[in-house]
Length: 260
Image (cartoon, rainbow, N blue to C red; front, side):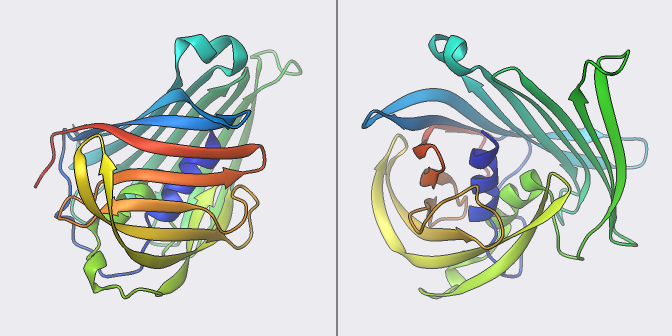
């Protein structure tokens, strides 16, 4: 499932000046995730993306939350309960805190990043289950140096929706960076075309993007695409991708609390 969230992050990172006019607190997007099993695309999980306001002692932050949960009938085959969330400045989308809490087929991992943008570092905690420790967990604490424009995966997912994509031209491409598992992952996107597709929200004119990773094998080949609505909301309505174990897709199911 990490490939799914990494794919989401990659497809949401056009390098154009941004101002967040696309979403607000209390928005919720719901998706169906499918996987090609024996030649048949089968829905196996629900993915949600939600925003909410969080008040701290000094400010009000925007919480960006992504969840993935397998449907009950697939839990015995490969149970997934994933939570990714980031706390950001609501205007600039600058990330301050990132958390990743995943349970995939019995494999558990918790990741926390505290960003220090003054010196371009991230304090990282990675926690995994281990029988070698009395607590049952193995903690690794590190300080990771990052580039000035590196973001966590969830912040990156939302970043694209704040960008003025209509300024991009067909064929434009660029390379960007996401911090994932304490490594800066580079990827390249190419703006392919505008297309109108049928979705659960009706017919939508969309920006079609192609994605390639340059130093990570999570996505395979040149057949990884996303369709973003070509309107002020820039909703991700459809995606298809290829990973080591097969092909998958992500389809919009419902959208509430839209800003525009």
